[in-house]
Length: 239
Ligand code: APR
Ligand code: ZN
Image 1: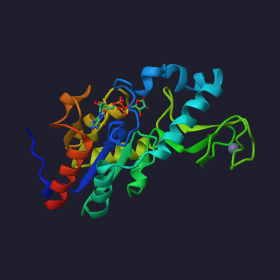
Image 2 (image 1 turned 120 degrees about the vertical axis):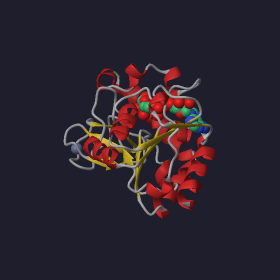
Image 3 (image 1 turned 180 degrees about the vertical axis):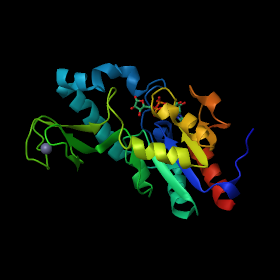
Image 4 (image 1 turned 30 degrees about the horizontal axis):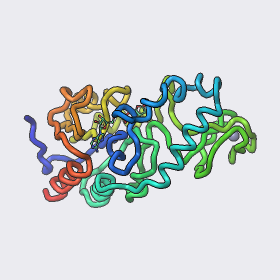
């Protein structure tokens, strides 16, 4: 097994998924009782679903935005914020999550590749605007003032995630790639480990159970994110 040698790690890329927010009480997608258990993602998280039934989609994301407000960051979020603050190298945090728990734990420059619940997107002018309230047909775009064109700023299935060029560059230049709390089912995020390995990085998966792409990682640490991420950060900062 390729050991992680912190002395030679300059650039770290960390990818998080819904599993890092599970211990904060936010549902994941594919665990039992997950978000996709009660809903068909194709009926909610696609542009076609939104044009077919906007009310259902507005309601789904408004409920998740409200739930998020009641959740608190956990030790895994806090450990990553600590690493970003104190690590001598560069730490790039890219998340598939649309919650703001990384930010509320103190992380800065979080790359939300699938968008954010605390933002709305205008289909007329393309403006992405910070948004804390419910969003529906009557929401007026802060960018162009039109209403009826504002949607949740979430990257849906079939749409291109944000900042893929930036992410690709970071993956090919990093020395350590860590995936935390993601099932490795959805691309392009599930393919990040391969890109990082091609760039020569050591790759580590932290997850409660093996993911769909677990075999592509040099090292796997099975367990709860709050425990495993805190231990990894301690290891990296101790070097
Ligand atoms: N600690 C560590 N891992 C955990 C924990 C925990 N406390 N709880 C759950 N997990 C793991 C699960 O075992 C699972 O492998 O987190 C993973 C969550 O997987 P998903 O629910 O599929 O979430 P994610 O991988 O983020 O989904 C990716 O799919 O629907 C789209 O856009 C949506 O961003 C989402 C994407
Ligand atoms: Zn607009």
